[in-house]
Amino acid sequence: MIFCFSIKNIVASAIKSCNYQYRHARTFRGGQSTFSAVQLKGRSFLTLKDFNSEEIKHLLWTAADLKHRLKNKGQFLPLLQGKSIAMIFEKRSTRTRISTETGFALLGGHPCFLTTQDIHLGTNESTADTARVLSGLTDLILARVYSQSTIDELAKEASVPVINGLSDLYHPIQILADFLTLQEHYGYLNGLTLSWIGDGNNVLHSFMMAAAKLGIHLRIATPKGYEPDASVTREAEKLSKECGTKLFLTNNPVEAARGSNVLVTDTWISMGQEEEKKQKLKDFHGYQITMQTGKVAAPNWTFLHCLPRKQEEVDDEVFYSQRSLVFPEAENRKWTIMGLMVSLLTEYTPQTPKPKF
Image 1 (tube, rainbow, N blue to C red):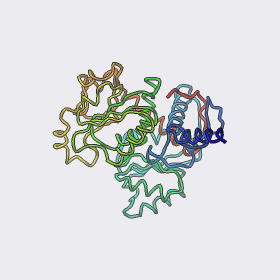
Image 2 (spheres, rainbow, N blue to C red; image 1 turned 180 degrees about the vertical axis):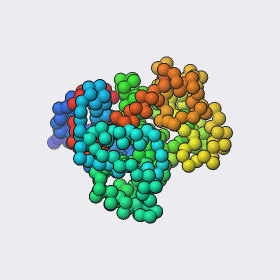
Image 3 (cartoon, rainbow, N blue to C red; image 1 turned 60 degrees about the vertical axis):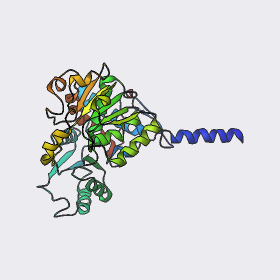
Image 4 (cartoon, rainbow, N blue to C red; image 1 turned 30 degrees about the vertical axis):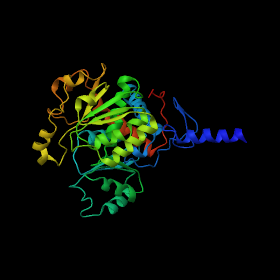
């Protein structure tokens, strides 16, 4: 009886651990599959809060696998042949549109680009009705919207998977590209320290929902009044404790950069906030990332920016330096969105060895 009780305790403890959040798990090794927790087909991708460590790693592995097979080996992989995606864009974008459109087509599918001039989401037709109509016409919906409530309603009413292409609260597809870029550069993610220096925005929120699950420490500097959302911060603190990582928040950009491997920023004036520019430039004084900022970072520090970039956020010396990973990061938007779309629509198993995370 004592022995059985001990075993039960061990099993219960394992189930609660950060890196193993489901009872059943499939372990993939170079294309060979056995029983696993990674079940992504048919799910929506609204926020990285909903995905555990192994699921995020599987998405990154799939992206790396497709990149190797399609780009490096020149293989033909019509994994999405006969399928279509509705791409709703309330907000314009270079990287999100081109990566999704070309990526879906490269995999044999048909992308349908829809702006506010093509459909009147929530105006001439309700969001719920739009979700139902598109579910009958396409296999997948990606929406780049102003409000998180819009993406949530689309997912609630749709009968096909929905991808958050950006909302006011989260930008999860960007973070997949950032993680893949860092994994390629450093050869691992676990143990890295990432410093965010800028606005407490949707990109930061997505980092906060995923970094700890991959063993990444977060150091965050935002001006007073521009801190990340309080509920997101509480969740990030909880994740950090569960996963044994460090989360540090400050209003001092130099303190945030201290000892960091990765310096990250984003635009201070998001689309639709142009009227706030003059005040924001004043409030963000001292937040520009320069080589001086990097002097307190780790010797191997690198720089990320999801683009488009403006001079006040990071100077040319850093942006165009060998430390900058912004252009590989931009390219990886394509491979990670392809890995995500394949994972949500098929039961594809990567054929290359699993990367070290």
